[in-house]
Length: 165
Image (cartoon, rainbow, N blue to C red; front, side):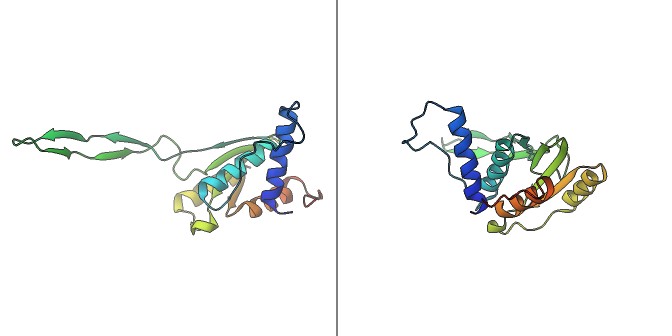
């Protein structure tokens, strides 16, 4: 069974526990999982970590927009937009990983580089952040698809456990 199927099975088991009175013969309303986009891969990883009983969250460092546009009328009554939409830097650390998690009391940072979209390379700031995390004793993973993350997780945290039931 592949990693996405295992994730779906974990979600079903969790849903059954939460909704014990839900009839067995009805299909549970489980969201579908895909690692074909960076957002989808991020959701797969976060849900998997949480379903395993640990903490995970998405880290956003994109900043925020400041809208300096305004609509004005010229002398003959025509409307036009002047000004621009500007982005100001966020307050997060430059190069921060996409996901921050705590697994078995360890700090884990996960950078999502979705293989399906061709996003393959870390920036210099991301490489520096990885060095800082690892130097401080944390773990750092670059996830290119859910299967590779899943394999990394079991190799790192559950050695000897058969995860391909």
